[in-house]
Image (cartoon, rainbow, N blue to C red; front, side):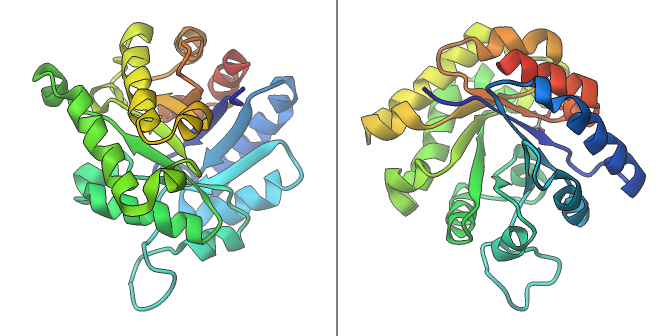
Length: 250
Ligand code: PEP
């Protein structure tokens, strides 16, 4: 049995006050979530605030990105050991916004995954196709290429130490969700791709769906056999919506 995970990606949103309100709103009702694991990924500067409020609670926290380096002259970067130092369990790697706006390649993302593991963090490894790629019938080849880059660098055993998030780029922040059948088709493909290397890793790895997941579509998506939770953007900024998705994952 794979424990569902619902992780909130807050992106570049928040203020000290808004973070307090959001965390308190989540903490007030997270007790109603019975089986799903819950995590939030605030912007770096709010991670200490998350640690302070969430320590001892059922909610884990993580970063949205990390450097491939552990320390040194890399202005503006944040290293995995720094995230671990502030109690992070997770770190998102390869989010499509980083791939698009920061030119992150499959190889760099794979290196970030490896750097996360070196720091003891669990990477949430984002993959997914653009609309053009889907319309060109390239969805499977794109996600296969992204997964294979990681396996080539670190082996399937390394992949098994993380979580995959399938996020069709055309569904992120657009309000256009993949149908449960569309999502399941790709999740099933990803799992079978991993199974070519290791049946054990394929059976154990959690594959989250991300892309305009909301309380009213979450249950049907997460009910699919190969969907093990969600990576949530917009809806993770409202405690009620985020918790609605967490309950749907139960
Ligand atoms: C995301 O950015 O990971 C995401 C899934 O965003 P949204 O839920 O807003 O589509």
